[in-house]
Amino acid sequence: MLEVSDLACMRGEQQLFSGLSFALKSGELLQVQGENGRGKTTLLRTLCGYIQPSAGDIHWQGKPVQELDEDYFADIIYLGHLNAIKDELTALENLHISSALSGCTINDSIAKSALKRMGLRGRETFPVKLLSQGQRRRVALARLLINKAPLWILDEPLTALDVGAVGLMQEMIGEHLLNSGIVIFTTHQPLEVAGVATRRLTLT
Amino acid sequence: MNKLSLPGLLGLVIRRDLMLAMRRRADVLTTLIFFVIVVSLFPLAVGSEMDLLRKMAPGVVWVAALLASMLSLGRMFSADYLDGTLEQMLLVPQSLSILVLGKIMSHWMLSGLPLVLMSPVLGLQFDMSGQALLILVFSLLIGTPVLSMIGAFGAALTLGLRGGGVLVALLVLPLCIPVLIFGTGAVIAVTSGVSPASNLSLLGAFLLMSLLFTPWVSAQALRISME
Image 1 (cartoon, rainbow over the protein chains, first blue to last red):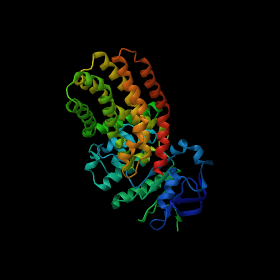
Image 2 (image 1 turned 180 degrees about the horizontal axis):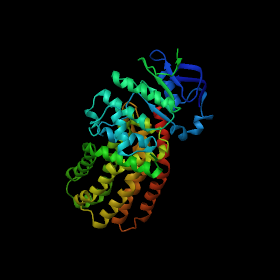
Image 3 (image 1 turned 120 degrees about the horizontal axis):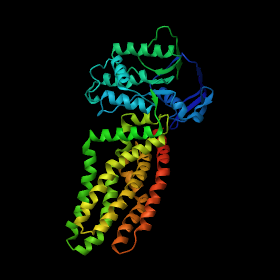
Image 4 (image 1 turned 45 degrees about the vertical axis):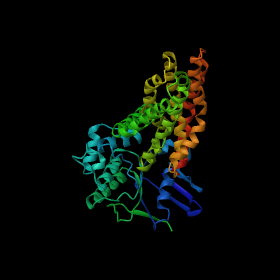
């Protein structure tokens, strides 16, 4: 489904990585590893199309992503370092807007059940600025439960999460892989998904 | 679960931005109050000679509107940029241009429209005639969306730069000169007994042109700024 061939990326004058090739089929899980500053985030952002690679190609379902453009965007979810939620809005409003922006409108009951699963029951109508860092991250992660995009690109999804939420995250990734999804993620915490072999890509 | 249509996306973005603005009203009020104060300073500074004031009025109101619209430009994308929402918006599967158009329209409703509505009251301070007031309001109504659209392009280009707020004004103000000329020209024409139609049609042409190009150009500028 996702094929990356001979990818190279520059940030400023610095070559972060080059000659990077890998292919992922549905149901596969890829962890991108590397020390700080090796280009993990750059790689993920390049896969999302934010950054143009200096060399190499990214193919999604056999077609180059530059050509697919917005059709490709419909198939991915990107979760970055920033939560992309609005402090002034409630968790529910945030979820409605973020899922609509990623292409699908949902009703209240779907949104509420997603927030409930993320452990935010009773907090749905609080302005997000009153929530803790971990709870905000949970609001951001709730988007994963709603969108049906097959490719998840998660940059440090576990930041600020407690043990329970990390477990939940493993469960969600497992379910997504079972539904023939693909997950690419970076993390500095251990994240193992039961019954799935994690492929590892180390940037040096 | 339904896929959102293009008009649906436009509506969503406008609703969202208006909702955010309603929870943070101070931002909207500062633009309007700035406009009111700048326009009101002129009669105080220049004196109360009616003829002079009447002649100055269109220029003063238009320049003040231009400066006031610069104030809010910095906020157009920067809040979304800082909390990561803009990053997600770039991945919108429908059309980034339409999303940008939605942001432009909500920006105009929050910063341009209040100025248009306030302008007749301020015009009275300058002893403008009823007909001149009408044309002033009308020219602002066509002209201020153009300011928002050109501004969006500038704001997108300077996103994330240090001192972006001043830079965007330096970039956008010269581009707004034609709008200023024909906007004030329409009011001056009507006060000197000539038809303002040609000035207003040119303003209308600017509006259509920028409606066609600026959302797309701003969307491209955003992609460049986010790289």
